[in-house]
Image (tube, rainbow, N blue to C red):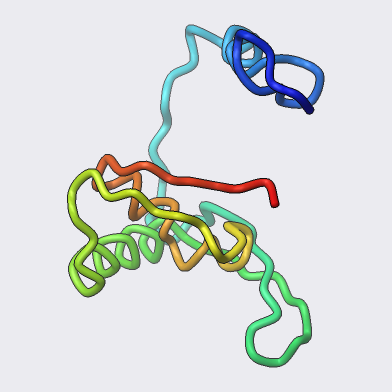
Length: 109
């Protein structure tokens, strides 16, 4: 879809219009258990055999912090996606970059 003056389209509405459809009274509810699932992801791993992977809150948090520390991700980093985010959640880099208040760059092609 083409971009209009209000921003890129998400389906048939602009991003801003989509946000207006949210519930202003919604209250965040933390997970009951840190081992609860946070995302269902897909990967082919090294076998070229697609499979589902369930990520949990604890693993997402631990992997995010490990990425920041071991990969030297700096505050306000800019990250160009070269691996699909659905591929095991991009090894948690979507959350890693968010944790350091960074910018995530995704190209359509």
